[in-house]
Structure formats: structure tokens, C-alpha cells
Length: 386
Image (cartoon, one colour):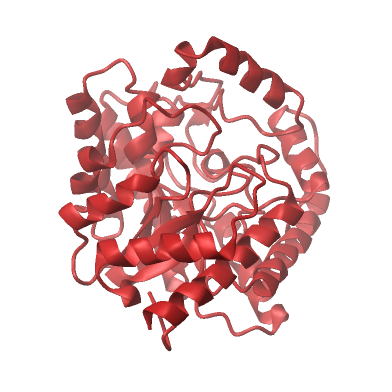
């Protein structure tokens, strides 16, 4: 999307959390008692901090950095009934091919204070959304932070996970079928979907499941089984957002926000036709990492609808390289060539920078520099394209 002959900038959602907030979340997940008043105070301060950092970096469409959540999907267990115990996520499929890397990855994460998403709770009972006040608290903190910056952002967004992400990670041990579980999750998550839009924010649905789960949950299954799962998830997303303005909803899809070989990733050509069945206005897709940069060209063969826009991932969220603005500009120019219209392309990141608290691979100072480089690169590209 462009306004006044300028490419807008945004990002995928999660931003670095202050160390004290990470520690509180890690303690709570470990079952330790925490001071809820301190947590609320830390969340409020962190939200104001990340909004100000986005302003200073030149972000046009900011969010709250997911500071009020311990993880981009795990937080739903505190807002929905039915979850308990511990499950076990399957490993990334390529780890079986690279045992040395698997050990390196395990050791690097073991040394961190973080919230792990590898052993999430499971659905042991009926799943219902019961804590709308927590969601409204988060929205209110964000909107207060926006007002306090005194900056006229172009727009702002809130994230929420797709039903498929929750179903694939937080396994079903209650419902007779996966479809029943997906239906319940979609009904519950629709409350957050609608709340974001009702409060004047863009809704971003985080759906890494629509690509990543091919080499995780469905790594040992035929491709058609995974594609069927993706179709069923998109159908639930469409039902959950029915009646919402299409232009106020965007869908983020990726192959997993982790450093690894990624040579088991499903090809975009396989999944894009299913993604385009989603009744959303925009798609955020990763094109900065070296495994998927080339797939921007798939959008020539399988184009977006004429009223849809692309948020092109032009910043890698897993390395501490600060992309040169010229590199960002070239990536945006290639995205515009693929889409065919500069006014339907926005600059974004491949994924979040801290999808689970403390798990991020990029230091905060480098994150802000990367976002600033994205702004500078978008300006370069905009000057050429317009």
C-alpha cells in the first residue's frame, strides 16, 4: 500500500521485550508465583517503549509488540477455557537430517531465559473464550501508548493467532474430530478478531501453520493431507471474520521463525492458491530470508486479487545483519514487479522478532536499526517507483 507516493512500512508483530518482562513470563510458565501488579506495570511500560521505538524508526503501521503476551499463541490459554497439562510439539523435520545443527540449536536455546513453545498445554475440555477483559486491557494499553507518542501513525494493527496455529501446537484431547476443535477455536478467537477491528485497528491473523506445519505436524504425511488441513483452516478463518471489512484484515504466513536449514519447507506455489481463498485484504509473506527470496516471482503466476495488497518481507528477523537500505529497496522493487502495482505493496519483516518471550535471536538495538533501514529502503524504492 502506498499513500502520497510513498511505500508504507510495518512489521509482523512481536518485538523485543525488556529482560524483566521476559523473566516474569518465564517464571509464570514455570509455575512460580508472580506479582500481577508488577506484570501489568511492566507491560504498560514496555508497550510505550516499543511504540516510541517504532515511531523513531519510521514505522507507518505499528502494533504493541505483543508485550502483553508471553508468546504469539500460548497466551490464549489464559483467555480461553479447556487447556491444561503439557503436550509435545514435533521437531522441525529437517533436524533429523542435520543432527549437528540440532544439537547446536538445542544448546543455544538451553542457555537462554525464555518461554518455550515446544511443550504447550493441550485441550482437555471444551474451549471457550472467557476473558475478553484481558484482550481489552491490551488494546487499551496500546491505544494509550499511541496517543502518548504524539505521532500521527498512518494506522495500527493487533495480532491474533489462526485457529490452525493453536490446533497444530496445542493438541486436541477433548473433541471427537479435529474439525470440531477447529470450529471451537475459530468461535473463540473470533472475539479477538472482532475486538481489534471494532476498536479501529487492523487485524493481523498469524497463520504460520498454513506453511510451517507441512514440515512439523504433517512432516510424515503426504502433501495432500497437509493441504487439506490448510483448506480447513482457511475456511474457519473466513467464518471467524465474516462481516469484518476485508480491507481491515491481513494474513501473515511463514515457514517458521527459527534459524535452520529450512530445506524441508513446502513450496509457496503449493500453498498460495489456498491462501488466496482467505477473505482478507492483505498478505504478509517472507521474502528476505535466503530460502524463500526467489518465491516472490510466484505472485506473477498466481496473482493476488485486484483489491488485495502484499506486505513483502524485506527484513530478516533471525540475523543481526542490518540490511542495507539499497537491498531493501531492491527487494521492494522486485515485489512491485511481481504484484504489478506499487500502490499495493508495503514493506514488512519476514516474521516477528520475539515470537515467544526471550526466544528472539536479534538484539533490541539491532532490531530498531533494522526497522530504520526498512524505512530508508522504502523511501529509496518509493522515489524510484513513483
